[in-house]
Length: 218
Image (cartoon, rainbow, N blue to C red):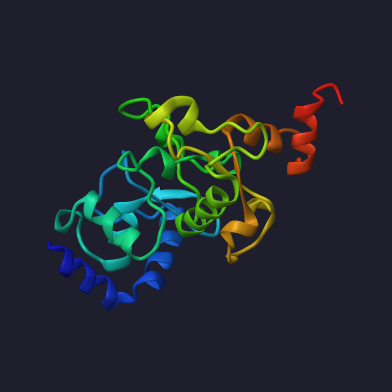
């Protein structure tokens, strides 16, 4: 099936609304006949953050058989509709994971045909992009607001653009979907600082993190 035929099929059944309904069905364990075990492409359910097999979700949404399209086509169509489909085709700057979303990785991601350790980009790529542009202009680069590391300067081209973005208000504390203002809601933190901010029972704010770094014994 061609890309245009898939687009037409999705538009016919309701586009994003049909995908969301299909996600609920997939989350409940429904698998269309003829669909195998997903190994790479998973789509993130916006409300729960759960990762679901992209091809199964598209099959449930459209009623198409597994032979009619590929997992790569499912990935492309879901991304076209604005859904987060993380994968190995993304650059380091897009796949920085946040601690609160690591728990959403499905068990199948590790221990299936091959062991995979992987990162997932932030839930809203557009918010991340606007946040990154804001902080780059403000600081003269993409710099951790905790320890001050600039991965591009420290590791050269290999590190350029890599950074976690911390939600000032954790998504896990909210119910349903909300708008994210990148510059206001997202703060660049290196993986170490990001993990420390989330460690423990209470979330550490950025000022407290900076105070901790300036005086570790405090």
